[in-house]
Length: 314
Image (tube, rainbow, N blue to C red; front, top):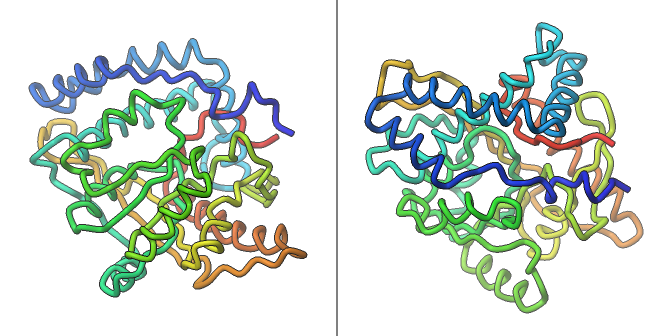
């Protein structure tokens, strides 16, 4: 079993609400280039002081290289590039949730998987990942009146979660604490889904108080993935989709209004999820393997867009 001290939920939050607001204000007044210059020493400080995150990034990048996702072997500072990519993405997240004049640059593959069910008043369970800028899709969904519930673990990102909850751009999304899914809450969730809500839950972070995981190959080596989303689709009797997101184009540093472009890809993992008691782990593993294949497909397009800075393989 993974050491509890190494679990992602025990990571200390680096996010400073004041710091992010200052950097965002700098961007709004002076543009992207000064923002990027100001961001560099902040990222370097975190990279230099957080050895666990630095090593986790290095481990991922080495596996990505051996799996053929990177053309060059990662060096000593490649993890710094990885962490800077994440920090830079925070600007895109803030633009998506705060900027009233946000100019969405989003390409969506297989959007019909969502729109057909939305038009029919039917929901689905969607497995997301810590990849790209999910907030851009949240903004898109909210603007198109998609009824959604995001199941989150906010204990280690409480300040950041509070920043995005209740913003005008995400006003149609309900944020539920995943650790509070007791029987009464599940009844409420079932009623929401019967009314056509979509449920979004991360598929690339194992639960902190549960052994509901399976081990499947990821980038050439077995890793643990949660089965919570699969089991949820089984209980709620809903289709199970995956959603991946990666950066597709870069905004010019001299353009104040233009944003980075992102591609979102939906895929059908299971039209219906039926888990037998006898073969539950095997059934879950087969579906999770399809999710992992989608995750690898996205990472092949943009390997620096996966933001899990903790020991993933154990």
